[in-house]
Image (cartoon, rainbow, N blue to C red; front, side, top):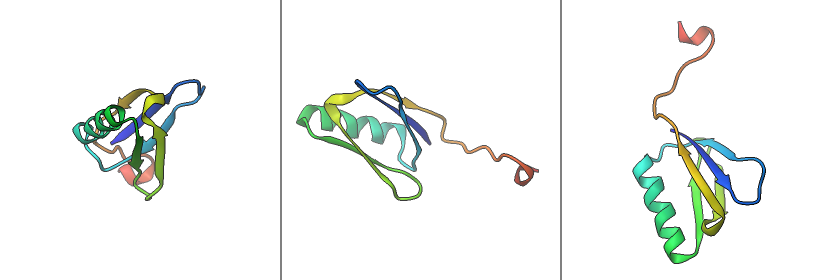
Length: 74
């Protein structure tokens, strides 16, 4: 699933692909906001993205299907 994280007071959003479901990400963010802790997401390459939950402006949760591009799509 493609995820875009908008961070308050930062001009660029963080974009990544993850195996986590939309419901799982929403639950993790809700818990992090309630506990005033960090929101952490791991992408498909194992990179950890950590943002203070209070600074998350929005989550843009894309579709979970992956579209092949280029000659591999044929």
